[in-house]
Image 1 (cartoon, rainbow, N blue to C red):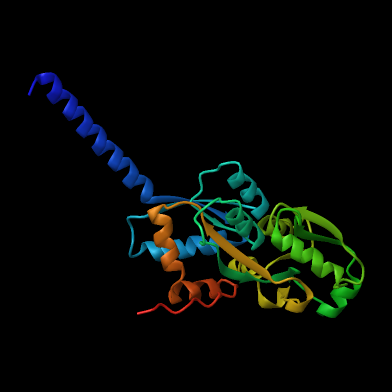
Image 2 (tube, rainbow, N blue to C red):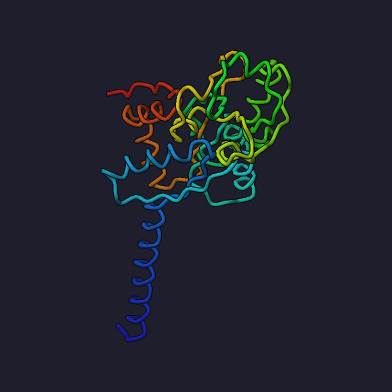
Length: 255
Protein backbone atom coordinates (compact mmCIF):
# COMPACT_ATOMS: atom_id res chain seq x y z
CA UNK A 1 0.00 0.00 0.00
CA UNK A 2 1.50 3.31 -1.08
CA UNK A 3 1.85 6.25 1.30
CA UNK A 4 -0.58 8.27 -0.84
CA UNK A 5 -3.32 5.62 -0.59
CA UNK A 6 -2.72 5.24 3.13
CA UNK A 7 -3.02 9.00 3.63
CA UNK A 8 -6.27 9.06 1.63
CA UNK A 9 -7.74 6.22 3.70
CA UNK A 10 -6.83 8.01 6.94
CA UNK A 11 -8.50 11.21 5.67
CA UNK A 12 -11.66 9.31 4.76
CA UNK A 13 -11.72 7.60 8.16
CA UNK A 14 -11.25 10.92 9.96
CA UNK A 15 -14.04 12.52 7.92
CA UNK A 16 -16.34 9.60 8.71
CA UNK A 17 -15.68 9.90 12.44
CA UNK A 18 -16.26 13.67 12.37
CA UNK A 19 -19.51 13.25 10.43
CA UNK A 20 -20.72 10.60 12.87
CA UNK A 21 -19.94 12.87 15.83
CA UNK A 22 -21.78 15.78 14.21
CA UNK A 23 -24.89 13.67 13.59
CA UNK A 24 -24.80 12.34 17.15
CA UNK A 25 -24.49 15.85 18.61
CA UNK A 26 -27.32 17.05 16.41
CA UNK A 27 -29.58 14.18 17.45
CA UNK A 28 -28.87 14.78 21.13
CA UNK A 29 -30.01 18.40 20.88
CA UNK A 30 -33.42 19.59 19.68
CA UNK A 31 -34.82 23.03 18.92
CA UNK A 32 -38.45 23.49 19.90
CA UNK A 33 -40.93 26.18 18.85
CA UNK A 34 -43.47 26.64 21.64
CA UNK A 35 -46.47 28.94 22.01
CA UNK A 36 -45.86 31.59 24.68
CA UNK A 37 -48.59 30.28 26.98
CA UNK A 38 -46.93 26.85 27.27
CA UNK A 39 -43.25 27.81 27.52
CA UNK A 40 -42.87 27.71 31.31
CA UNK A 41 -44.78 24.44 31.53
CA UNK A 42 -42.61 22.90 28.82
CA UNK A 43 -39.46 24.08 30.63
CA UNK A 44 -40.69 22.27 33.77
CA UNK A 45 -41.48 19.14 31.77
CA UNK A 46 -38.06 19.13 30.13
CA UNK A 47 -36.35 19.58 33.51
CA UNK A 48 -38.22 16.54 34.82
CA UNK A 49 -37.38 14.56 31.68
CA UNK A 50 -33.67 15.39 31.93
CA UNK A 51 -33.38 14.00 35.46
CA UNK A 52 -33.10 10.53 33.92
CA UNK A 53 -31.89 11.55 30.45
CA UNK A 54 -29.20 14.22 30.90
CA UNK A 55 -27.68 13.35 27.53
CA UNK A 56 -30.42 15.27 25.71
CA UNK A 57 -30.57 19.05 25.53
CA UNK A 58 -33.23 21.43 24.21
CA UNK A 59 -33.38 24.99 22.95
CA UNK A 60 -36.77 26.71 23.19
CA UNK A 61 -38.03 29.51 20.95
CA UNK A 62 -41.37 30.98 22.07
CA UNK A 63 -43.83 33.47 20.65
CA UNK A 64 -47.32 33.62 19.21
CA UNK A 65 -48.51 30.51 17.40
CA UNK A 66 -49.02 32.49 14.19
CA UNK A 67 -45.48 33.88 14.25
CA UNK A 68 -43.90 30.47 14.88
CA UNK A 69 -46.06 28.89 12.18
CA UNK A 70 -44.85 31.49 9.68
CA UNK A 71 -41.24 30.82 10.65
CA UNK A 72 -41.70 27.08 10.09
CA UNK A 73 -43.32 27.69 6.70
CA UNK A 74 -40.28 29.79 5.81
CA UNK A 75 -37.86 27.01 6.70
CA UNK A 76 -36.94 27.62 10.35
CA UNK A 77 -35.06 24.49 11.56
CA UNK A 78 -37.32 23.47 14.45
CA UNK A 79 -37.63 19.84 15.50
CA UNK A 80 -40.93 20.19 17.41
CA UNK A 81 -43.77 22.69 17.33
CA UNK A 82 -46.12 23.17 20.30
CA UNK A 83 -48.96 25.38 19.05
CA UNK A 84 -51.74 27.00 21.04
CA UNK A 85 -54.29 25.73 18.53
CA UNK A 86 -55.02 22.67 16.43
CA UNK A 87 -55.30 24.31 13.02
CA UNK A 88 -51.68 25.21 12.38
CA UNK A 89 -50.08 21.83 13.20
CA UNK A 90 -52.78 20.18 11.10
CA UNK A 91 -52.04 22.59 8.24
CA UNK A 92 -48.34 21.74 8.41
CA UNK A 93 -49.19 18.05 8.19
CA UNK A 94 -51.44 18.66 5.17
CA UNK A 95 -48.62 20.61 3.52
CA UNK A 96 -46.21 17.75 4.05
CA UNK A 97 -44.14 19.66 6.61
CA UNK A 98 -42.95 17.44 9.44
CA UNK A 99 -43.32 13.75 10.27
CA UNK A 100 -46.47 12.08 8.97
CA UNK A 101 -49.18 11.27 11.55
CA UNK A 102 -47.29 12.99 14.38
CA UNK A 103 -49.90 15.66 15.14
CA UNK A 104 -51.49 15.12 18.55
CA UNK A 105 -53.28 17.02 21.31
CA UNK A 106 -51.02 17.82 24.25
CA UNK A 107 -53.20 20.19 26.30
CA UNK A 108 -56.59 21.89 26.50
CA UNK A 109 -56.37 25.53 27.51
CA UNK A 110 -58.69 27.83 29.44
CA UNK A 111 -59.16 31.60 29.62
CA UNK A 112 -58.84 33.54 32.87
CA UNK A 113 -59.96 37.14 33.42
CA UNK A 114 -57.42 38.76 35.73
CA UNK A 115 -58.28 41.79 37.90
CA UNK A 116 -55.43 42.57 40.34
CA UNK A 117 -56.53 43.61 43.83
CA UNK A 118 -60.18 42.93 43.04
CA UNK A 119 -62.40 44.74 45.54
CA UNK A 120 -65.85 44.29 43.99
CA UNK A 121 -68.04 41.29 43.08
CA UNK A 122 -67.46 39.92 39.59
CA UNK A 123 -71.02 40.78 38.52
CA UNK A 124 -70.38 44.42 39.37
CA UNK A 125 -67.07 44.45 37.52
CA UNK A 126 -68.56 42.99 34.35
CA UNK A 127 -71.50 45.40 34.54
CA UNK A 128 -69.67 48.64 35.34
CA UNK A 129 -66.13 48.33 33.97
CA UNK A 130 -65.32 50.98 31.35
CA UNK A 131 -61.55 50.80 31.13
CA UNK A 132 -59.07 48.96 28.90
CA UNK A 133 -58.72 45.21 28.52
CA UNK A 134 -55.50 43.46 27.53
CA UNK A 135 -55.82 40.42 25.26
CA UNK A 136 -53.53 38.57 22.89
CA UNK A 137 -53.73 39.51 19.22
CA UNK A 138 -56.60 37.39 17.79
CA UNK A 139 -54.90 37.26 14.38
CA UNK A 140 -51.85 35.32 15.54
CA UNK A 141 -52.70 34.06 19.05
CA UNK A 142 -55.43 31.41 19.62
CA UNK A 143 -56.03 32.66 23.18
CA UNK A 144 -56.68 36.10 21.73
CA UNK A 145 -59.17 34.64 19.25
CA UNK A 146 -60.95 32.79 22.07
CA UNK A 147 -61.02 36.01 24.11
CA UNK A 148 -62.57 37.83 21.16
CA UNK A 149 -65.32 35.20 20.93
CA UNK A 150 -65.92 35.49 24.66
CA UNK A 151 -66.28 39.27 24.44
CA UNK A 152 -68.85 38.85 21.68
CA UNK A 153 -71.08 36.95 24.13
CA UNK A 154 -71.45 40.15 26.16
CA UNK A 155 -69.32 39.24 29.15
CA UNK A 156 -68.78 42.97 29.73
CA UNK A 157 -71.89 45.14 29.60
CA UNK A 158 -69.78 47.97 28.17
CA UNK A 159 -67.31 46.75 25.52
CA UNK A 160 -63.85 47.67 26.86
CA UNK A 161 -61.08 49.28 24.84
CA UNK A 162 -58.81 46.46 23.70
CA UNK A 163 -55.05 46.61 24.17
CA UNK A 164 -53.48 43.81 22.16
CA UNK A 165 -50.28 41.98 22.98
CA UNK A 166 -48.58 39.64 20.54
CA UNK A 167 -49.34 36.70 22.87
CA UNK A 168 -50.95 35.94 26.25
CA UNK A 169 -47.68 36.52 28.07
CA UNK A 170 -47.50 40.08 26.81
CA UNK A 171 -51.18 40.67 27.61
CA UNK A 172 -50.44 39.53 31.15
CA UNK A 173 -47.43 41.86 31.34
CA UNK A 174 -49.57 44.88 30.39
CA UNK A 175 -51.58 44.38 33.58
CA UNK A 176 -48.64 43.23 35.69
CA UNK A 177 -46.85 46.49 34.87
CA UNK A 178 -49.91 48.56 35.84
CA UNK A 179 -50.50 49.95 32.35
CA UNK A 180 -53.85 48.16 31.95
CA UNK A 181 -56.34 47.23 34.69
CA UNK A 182 -57.79 43.96 33.37
CA UNK A 183 -56.47 41.13 31.18
CA UNK A 184 -57.89 38.09 29.45
CA UNK A 185 -55.04 35.63 29.63
CA UNK A 186 -54.64 31.89 30.15
CA UNK A 187 -55.37 30.03 33.36
CA UNK A 188 -51.86 28.61 33.14
CA UNK A 189 -50.36 32.10 33.05
CA UNK A 190 -52.04 33.26 36.27
CA UNK A 191 -51.24 29.99 38.06
CA UNK A 192 -47.58 30.18 37.06
CA UNK A 193 -47.42 33.80 38.24
CA UNK A 194 -48.90 32.92 41.63
CA UNK A 195 -51.96 35.15 41.19
CA UNK A 196 -54.37 34.72 44.16
CA UNK A 197 -57.51 32.77 43.23
CA UNK A 198 -59.81 35.65 44.18
CA UNK A 199 -58.20 37.86 41.53
CA UNK A 200 -59.14 35.82 38.46
CA UNK A 201 -62.43 34.66 36.99
CA UNK A 202 -62.92 31.55 34.88
CA UNK A 203 -65.66 32.07 32.28
CA UNK A 204 -67.93 29.17 31.41
CA UNK A 205 -66.19 26.99 28.82
CA UNK A 206 -69.37 27.00 26.72
CA UNK A 207 -68.96 30.73 26.06
CA UNK A 208 -65.92 30.39 23.80
CA UNK A 209 -64.40 27.75 21.51
CA UNK A 210 -62.32 25.27 23.52
CA UNK A 211 -58.63 25.91 23.12
CA UNK A 212 -57.28 22.63 21.78
CA UNK A 213 -53.49 22.76 21.66
CA UNK A 214 -51.64 20.38 19.35
CA UNK A 215 -48.01 19.62 18.65
CA UNK A 216 -46.26 18.24 15.60
CA UNK A 217 -42.91 16.52 15.16
CA UNK A 218 -40.99 18.34 12.43
CA UNK A 219 -37.95 16.09 12.11
CA UNK A 220 -36.62 12.65 13.05
CA UNK A 221 -34.40 14.19 15.73
CA UNK A 222 -33.64 11.62 18.44
CA UNK A 223 -33.93 14.05 21.37
CA UNK A 224 -37.28 15.36 20.14
CA UNK A 225 -38.67 11.85 19.72
CA UNK A 226 -37.45 10.79 23.16
CA UNK A 227 -39.12 13.85 24.71
CA UNK A 228 -42.41 12.98 23.04
CA UNK A 229 -42.35 9.50 24.59
CA UNK A 230 -41.92 11.08 28.02
CA UNK A 231 -44.67 13.66 27.40
CA UNK A 232 -47.19 10.86 26.87
CA UNK A 233 -46.45 9.44 30.33
CA UNK A 234 -48.74 9.74 33.34
CA UNK A 235 -46.19 11.80 35.27
CA UNK A 236 -45.91 14.32 32.45
CA UNK A 237 -49.70 14.60 32.23
CA UNK A 238 -49.88 15.33 35.94
CA UNK A 239 -47.43 18.21 35.50
CA UNK A 240 -49.50 19.58 32.60
CA UNK A 241 -52.67 19.50 34.71
CA UNK A 242 -51.01 21.14 37.70
CA UNK A 243 -49.93 23.97 35.40
CA UNK A 244 -53.54 24.88 34.57
CA UNK A 245 -54.37 22.75 31.54
CA UNK A 246 -56.47 19.69 30.92
CA UNK A 247 -54.17 16.93 29.74
CA UNK A 248 -55.68 14.63 27.09
CA UNK A 249 -55.99 10.97 27.95
CA UNK A 250 -53.34 8.93 26.18
CA UNK A 251 -54.14 5.55 24.59
CA UNK A 252 -53.12 2.57 26.62
CA UNK A 253 -49.87 0.94 25.54
CA UNK A 254 -50.27 -2.56 24.15
CA UNK A 255 -48.24 -5.27 25.84
